[in-house]
Figure 1 (cartoon, rainbow, N blue to C red):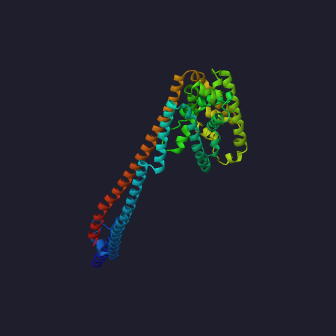
Figure 2 (cartoon, one colour):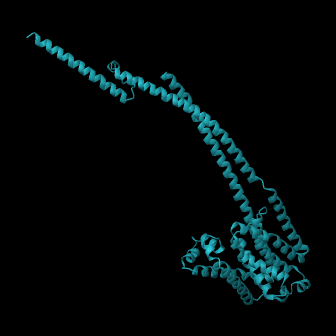
Figure 3 (cartoon, rainbow, N blue to C red):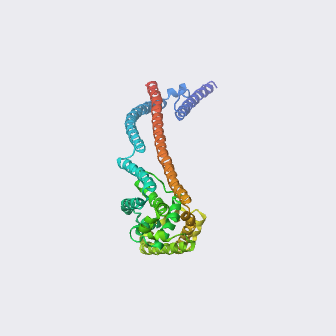
Length: 410
């Protein structure tokens, strides 16, 4: 009877040791699963050799991780210095871009002076020597149009050179120097100059940008024909006009029907030539992406009701519809010709308004283009500076924390 309790005690002791061992392993696993935090490791866990090994391994891993962090921060500092150098170079390039915005090239400065003097010279000749205005106009056309031809052909915009504005300037040069006695040619030049070309300055926003040879050329070929016709009709003496431009002297008053007829014939001649040499003979190049005025307008006004209507038509009706709209535009814009031909004051106001519109568009271009471009460069520079400052602040905060962690692990 006495041996049974002893046996039971040994068995209970073995069960207690087994429970203690299981409990320590469970605690050890729990500690490992929770990151081996000192708050989670019990005394029994420390008696387990596997737990001590895991703790040492965890310590070594933590020490290695902190070392990597510190080394990484050192590399970041090294890379940050490289980034600072790169950022300085970016700043230098940004300041160069800003300086380019604020300054102009020597060619632009010279052309700016040339443009201003040309405007002054036109004003002087109109008031004092009107018989020289058509000569100055011809000289400018002889200088600017060849430059326009070369630049547009090189840029892939050669088909724009067949537009109506060039055709009208060609007619005016032909009238001035070849057929000055032609009444029909004079009426056509007058209708186109005061009609489509003058209103194009307002409609298509031609800009009097004095330093740009491209924009000043576009403006002059639209504005100057109307000025030349004003001088020819209202500024020249009857004797000089009869001798030098007999075609204009034959038109005593403007006849609306004959003006529409002559202009329509001339307009349709241009249209037939344009579509034969451009639309038909160059159709493959146009399909491959060659730009024409029709394709440009077709895309630009795709969201406008009239543009949607024209684009919805099956081929070749969009071209025909566009030609009809353009013809109606020409007829409507030349409706002021009888008034402008009769009244010198009205003609002066009209020509001045066209020039003011071009000058206003040019001023808008200067403010919007250069002002906004300068503003974008400054904002971009500010963002780069802020990004660099944030990186430096993050490094300044994180590096001491990493060093403290490394010291604690040691």
